[in-house]
Image (cartoon, rainbow, N blue to C red):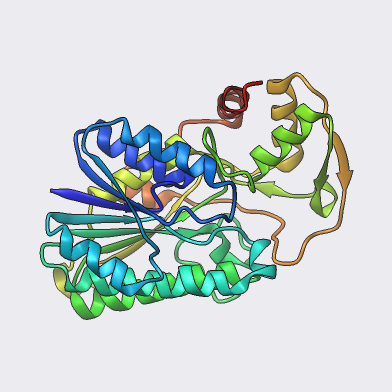
Amino acid sequence: MTILVTGAAGFIGMHVAAALLERGETVIGLDNLNDYYDPTLKQARVERLQERAGFRFVRADIASAEAVSGIFRSNPAIDRVVHLAAQAGVRYSLTNPEAYIQTNLVGHFNMLEACRHHRGLRHLVYASSSSVYGGNTKLPFAVEDHVDQPVSLYAATKAADELMSHCYSHLYGFPSTGLRFFTVYGPWGRPDMSAFIFTRAILRGEPITVFNRGDMRRDFTYVDDIVAGVVAALDRPPSASGGATPHRRYNLGNNHAEPLLRFIEAIERATNHKAIIELAEMQPGDVKETYADIETARRDIGFVPRTSIDEGIPRFVAWFRQYHGL
């Protein structure tokens, strides 16, 4: 049988596909290799996957219904889907909102439609985000909390994806699971994320901008822990027993809110360079703190994060140096 991984050229997608290949799965990786950030990095991720047996790459855009349905028609052995393709980034949604509508709403809808018409589908696992908690002030964020106060369009599209997925699972009976990722970092990370931005600037001796004058906390989660959670969720599709809708949502986070300045200090230690910090006010669409309650994920899928930033940041910096030939 075959697993379709969308967003396979992305940061988390590459790592998930690699983990599935490692355990002997057949994987079709789908990505459109767009230019939201340097496509060279995306291509390098794909090339790493293509070195492994059992992987095939398809370049396509999930915003095209015909492309998505065609992949399923051409590959009847697909029985599980890990849908990670999305337009990411809170700040980019302020300047290019259409990208979020096309990829996160239209693209997610196309995936749901293809899944409901595909015979033999056992489980759809899809990426949501801690951003759905928006303006919530109760900490830690729990999956039972309301998510009706988004503070960015990105967050609104991810919350909508969860609602659409619940509806499709209710109407058509196929199991689906949404995973709310909390500030993922690690080797092969995206250039628009804080670990990459800070490391690059610190090594170049350039200043870094720290918003809300440094008064921010994030539940930084190492990519290997996220991958373990994704695979565990994939292996445990929700049940429809007792008339329940076979749809679940889980937080995947480190279960520890770190001060942003301590995160920067970890990068300083790993690079052996001092950061030049420029304090700034909070940006629109941003939130002061994220913190994941992972008890439901621990109970249902055995999710246990194991990597602190003191372990994860040096691994990221080592990859960064090697990738950039530093």
